[in-house]
Image (tube, rainbow, N blue to C red; front, side):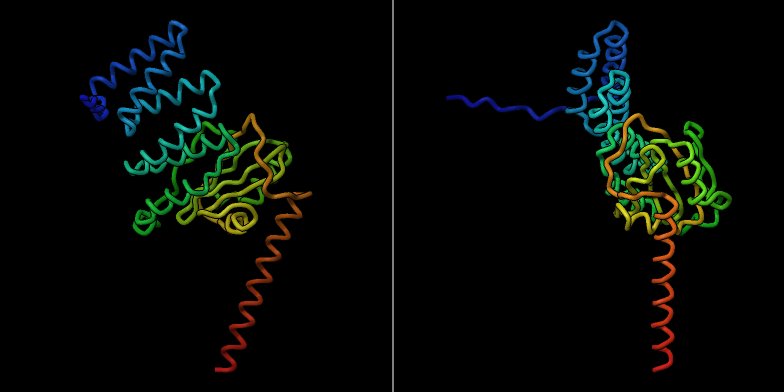
Length: 253
C-alpha cells in the first residue's frame, strides 16, 4: 500500500504576498470579507513571519469588528517587530491588543520589549525622549507632567482607557474604567506591585488612549487619590525603614 507523503508548507514569495494582498483588497471591495479572511489565513499559515500579511489581516479584522482575531494578530506582530528591532511599532501593537481585548495581559510583551531594547538604553540614555504619538486622547512628557497629574485628568473626565508610560527603564500601562484605576502592568508585574513601580517613574513620556470596552478589575479601590497616597506612603515608610537598618548596621560596624 502506497503512503501519501504530505509536502511541507512552502513559504509565500514576496511576489505572491503582493498578489495575496491585492486579492484581499478586491474581496473587501466587493463585500466578501470572509473570502479575504480565508485567503489571508492560508497565506499566513505558509508564511507566519510575514508582517504585511498579518498587518492586512489585523486591518480587515478591525474593520469587520472581529476584535479577538485582530488582537491575536497584534500580539503576533509584537514578536515580529521586536525581531526587527522596531520597538516603537512593537509597543504600539501591544497597546492596541490591550485596547482591542481588555482581557489580554501585556506584561510578557512589555518585558520582552524591555529586554530586547535594554542595550539601547545604556547607549541612548542622554538622548532626547521618544516622540509622543498624536493619535491619542492626550499625551505628555513626565518631566513636566507627573503621573499623579495624568491620573487626575483621566479621573475628572471619567474616561475608560489605557495610560501607557515609556521611559529608559520602564514600559508600563495603567488601565482605567470610568476614570478609576483597575489594573497596572510594568516589566513583568501587574496589579498593585506594578503600580508601585509606575508611581515612581519621573522621566519619559505618557500617552492615554480611550477604549470602548472596560478592563478586568485587578486593583479594587474606592478612590484614585487615596490609593496613590497610600502607595506613596508605603514606599516612603519602606525607604525610611531601610535607611534606619543601614544606620544601625553602620553603627554596629
